[in-house]
Amino acid sequence: MSSRVIGVGITGTTLTEMERQILRDTPPYAIVLFGRNVESEAQLRDLVAECKSFSSRPPLILIDEEGGRVDRLRSLIPGMPSAESFLEGERTRTMVGWFGGIIGMALRYFDIEVNLAPVVDIQREHPTKGLERRCFGFDAETVTRLAGEFVRGQHEAGTASCLKHFPGISRGSGDPHYGATVVDIPLEELRAEDLRPYMELGNEAGAVMIGHAIYPQIDEPRLPASLSRRMSTEILRDVVGFRGIAFSDDMEMHAVSDLGTYEEITDRALLAGNDVILYCSHIERVPQLMEHMENRAANDPEFAPRFAEATRRADDYLAFVDQLRAANPPKVSTFAELEDAVGEFTAAFEKAGGETGRAISLPKGFSDRRTYPRFREDGTPDDRRDGERTEKKPGSGRSGREEWT
Image (tube, helix red, strand yellow):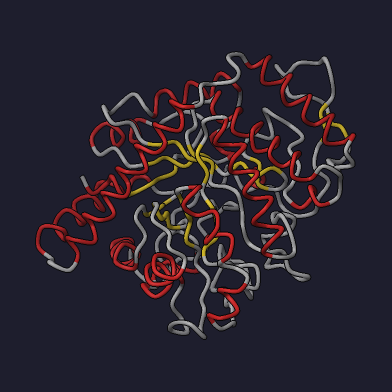
């Protein structure tokens, strides 16, 4: 039962026998897909279908499909622009809504229920490393307006959204994938800017991802938001008024993974207020975490009600996703139809002045009826991180599998 508040990643383009056994015996609440899991159209559809085949209550399939540098489907659907590129052209709100619809349509075609997007961090003059060109604007009003269009576009395609990275990491001192990042501002300033997108869009989206930044003027000076009850419950629920599900960011990022064992940081994250805890690299830990959390829920009177609350929110979110999909049937039924929709969008985006960069050759199996633009940005794309395989334990250094989230 406790695995129903855990989300996991899988290692490659097909399931291993170990992964099949875990998905059969201790199915998680969610599976998060990365570039390492995407090879071809047919392969991805088969992988998603198999991931859902082992349980009467299949895991939700999650992915980070923002466009730009965080584009897990770039080998299948080239040319998705970054969030910031929408500030460069005309008809911005219309184009962002269309963009959300295109991404939602693509994920629906692959039977992926939830996009861990949009980013609602506010762009700064010198952004936190890892956030470059991933934000919709330089002020809270613009970010809220454009992210809202993106969310509604996705929802009209039957794909759910998740706002990130709560409560705002764009003024962080570093990249949380590799260590602590500090946002040294008071609550009043956080509330005036960074929290506004969550206040206005959180309950519409239904899901929020809690980041790992540290806020020393608001809570303990070494405590990530994901382990902070002050941030993950008091501010998220009481100040923001959010009623939906809270996903943790990947607990194997070094900003948090070096703070304890998997069991310890899972307990702390749940008690802080996260409802679903994500481990994006090590699915083999699910059975142990399941046993640990079941024992804790059965024997700890402080842990049991928080676990029950998280489980209820997780169930409610499943119902929300089901309702969203039922109200919005798929808009395409073939990959060729999806190609046409993508091509129409990218052509219109360029005509409106949006910058997607130079055209590239199409992947094998992709239609040669047109060329599709590629983003023009610096920074390491997620697929360069794929394929590395090293063991990871808290405090042992890089796992080799961190990817932009």
